[in-house]
Length: 111
Image (cartoon, rainbow, N blue to C red; front, top):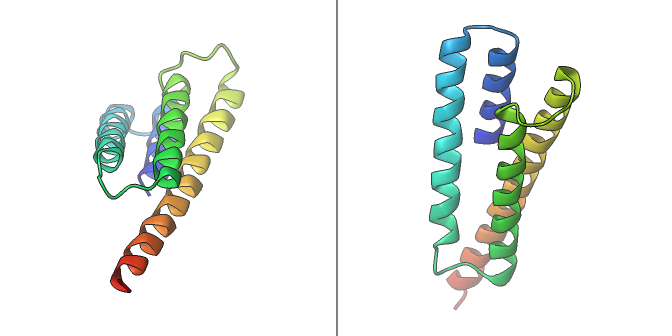
């Protein structure tokens, strides 16, 4: 859900709906997402597939940050499409990772 909060706060900032608050929340959400992602990447429980998907999530975050920080040379309309599309990919990928961890833990319960 952090990816969706990132997109929401980005849109609020872009559309000047509480821009200072939106910027602060956006930065907090980005920091938390990055921190949690690094914690997951450091887990000794990770399988090759989980690690691959976590790295993909990190790449999505890096790409999204370019849009969130205005570093893309595209129109505002396209920028929000790219950013929200990327945060949707982040959400879908994290759902896959959650399922992978669930499968991993369920398989360990049967040992």
